[in-house]
Length: 270
Image 1 (tube, rainbow, N blue to C red):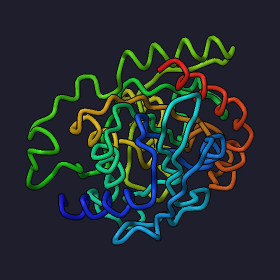
Image 2 (cartoon, rainbow, N blue to C red):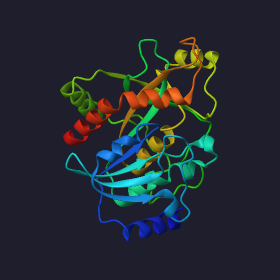
Image 3 (cartoon, rainbow, N blue to C red):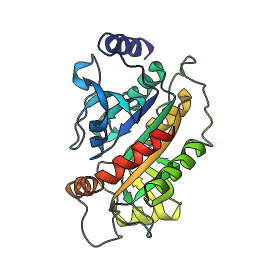
């Protein structure tokens, strides 16, 4: 992994001039945030040797570097998922890149199904904690000491300081923010109503198929994390209508202005 990482970093150094402080991982339908970045430098995933490519609709598949709210950022416009067939180490390779590039803080976003009955499609949820039900962990296998400790603490996987900052940013933008626990499952099938009842009973407020591997790795790497879910649909059994990825994309499109203003305000306060 270290050799692979070094090769990727060497490749990027020849093509970019920006040293980012903040990393952004943009989920389904939320990649539009990268269009707000100024003085862009763009690197397509497929151009990077031995790098995964995103195969899901709504994921552009490129890194966008530049300036956002007067901060130097690198945005991952499209992520990788376990259900696409990638290994956990491939999924979190961009976070390892962030680590090697000196990124100190990371904002990770996703489209999620609402489990909490008080939520509605189009709501935003600050992730306060997560439940890993993916059946795997990106740190499984040999630990590389130069990347992090063998047994990283996860008692504050999502930075309380950044959560407070996000709440203040939402107040400034007059946006309502929910807070809750995100459950990660393998996918790609949506959950059954029985599974959603189970997730609700164990304390989950939203469910999705991403984010947790990246957050575990970021904590291992010593990167401070803020997680934000866009509730793009209510989970199975909450409403009578069937679930459809096109509806997810539609809701993400509808919340685009609020999402952009929220992330910008958060980054301004960092």
